[in-house]
Image (tube, one colour):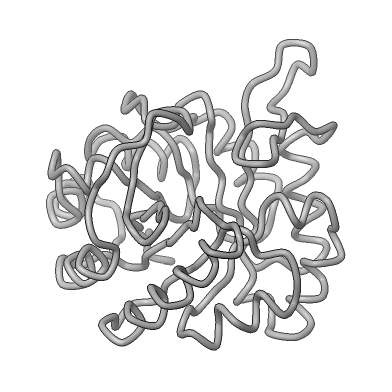
Length: 252
């Protein structure tokens, strides 16, 4: 039986970790290298770094942060934000990341997924999907540019397309639930988990340990990601894991 993973997420802006609600109102949450080390020691299964200031300057800062973090970490970590080409992927993986996450760039150029998967192997490529329920579409719509621009894609269709092109994992964020702390978007998570053959990481909405349980059981996710509840010590990776173990979930 495959073990479920608990993944803290670090949104990095200009070399600092920040956190907001529904992608806005960002506040400082600390030093990325120190936080990464702390989560590693606490028993996190993996880490995700998202560079949310991915201009040229942001990218340079991020490579330094990735190198410093790789030197401290024993667990795998994924880096995303502003990765637009095979060269960008190479730079991030060379700096010590285990996987790269693509989002907007992959929607603008789906060939980027195939290119990365062919060069590095599917296990290195994560496709991040930001989705929001859309009445007109009667389904979940995919957004780009940090949740600012709607696309024509339904989340399920884009997830299937990404897998067809070679992605090894889906990082699925519910924009409706992001930072709200009242639970993951279970319907969206289940739809995607049932539609694809690769692991799905649920993201957006974690408020307590029981929300992780729901993501794994009702949402059928393979991993669940959270940020603010860990950064601001509202709960810990250890507490979440203890609670899940107590409820019979197979975790590391």
